[in-house]
Image (cartoon, rainbow, N blue to C red):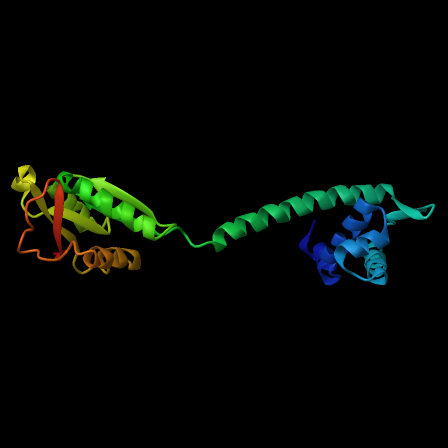
Length: 220
């Protein structure tokens, strides 16, 4: 249909009229449709009259004390079902776009810090429902390359890889300098520090099996 032809429907407020028509056609009664739509009965009758004038066809015929659809009315009822389905799908797609994307925290760690990183992420996600977190584990050199490319938010790097066999492991919580941390990553770093995991970076804690110790630094 040419756009110029469609303008006449827009000009007459056709969509409210179609909603009224659909309710009357489905319920078979102007009174029941008015009740469902919370409209006055004369308003429903007026909307139906205007719609028939715009379409230039009769949509209903009297049948006793009720109404029956004419052939044109049945065609329009089918079209209303298709139209309302399209509008429903459109509304669903728009609703998905209204929702903010899930907050994502990307953490990378060397193998010796895997367990500590997993524990920190699990605790953080428990405190902040709805946060999605990912953990990438790799050796130090590839992680530094990932840092240069900005592929992750925060990095747990061993200060001394030779300490892997020690009773405790020392690591640093790092991120690239010159690149602002996302708010979620900032919160993660703050909470790690508040938990005391960043204290005493230059004074390792007393040895303990499988322990973790860290500091926060910015990597060039």
